[in-house]
Length: 285
Image (spheres, rainbow, N blue to C red):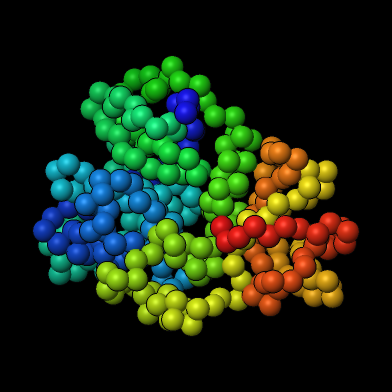
C-alpha cells in the first residue's frame, strides 16, 4: 500500500500524568485505558455524560515516559479539558492542555513513517485503512511529511464510508448513544469497571437493542442520494435516515451510511424520494 498523507484539523491535546492518571482516565472514558497503554496504539473512545450519551469522541495514546494523551478534533473539542478536569479532586494526577504545543498529520500505509525531529509516531486507524498519527512540536518549521502524496478528500471520504467509520457532524453528535453508531464494538470496554455513563451503556448491552443502528448501505451507481434523505419501508413507514454518501462509486455501486430504525430491520427499505430505489443493507457500520 502506497503511503499517503491525510490532512486533519488541528486537535485539542490533553496530557494526563501522575500515579493516578491511568486510573482516573479509566473512570472518565468508555475505553479501557490499560489496553491503550499495553498496546502502544492510539485507540478511540467516547466521553459520555451520566446518561451514557456522547459528549466527545477522542483518541487516546500512551507516551514512553508513562504519560497518557487524549486528542479530539471535532466541533466542541475546546470543552474537552473542562470535562476531563471536572472530577479531578483527590487523585494524584495532573491534566495539561498541550494543544498549542503539538501538531499532527495522519499517514496511511503499512510501514511506519519516520518520526520528525522532536516528534513521535503512533499507530491509528482513521478511515478504515492502516495508518499512523505523526506528532511533532508546533515549533518545527516546514510541513511533514511533505514528500508524500496527499489523499484526495473525495477518495478519503469514500474510503471512510465504505469501511463504515462514523464521523462527527455526519453520524456522530452530542447526545447520541454510542451503541447506536456501533461504537460499542470499537470504543467501549464492558469489562474494565465503572466510568461515567457506564450503567446506561451496560444496560443497553444487556437488553441487546437500541431504537436505531448505523448501517452500511449500497446503492446502484445511478441513484442520486444526499445526506438527510429519509428511508421508508414497503408500507411507507419511517425506516431511517441517510447520513453520508460516498463521493466516489466503486464497482458500479455507491457506499452510503445511514441510521435504520429497529422496526425496519429485516424489511425492504427504499428512498422516500425514489420508491423504486431499494437499498441494500450490507451490515452494521
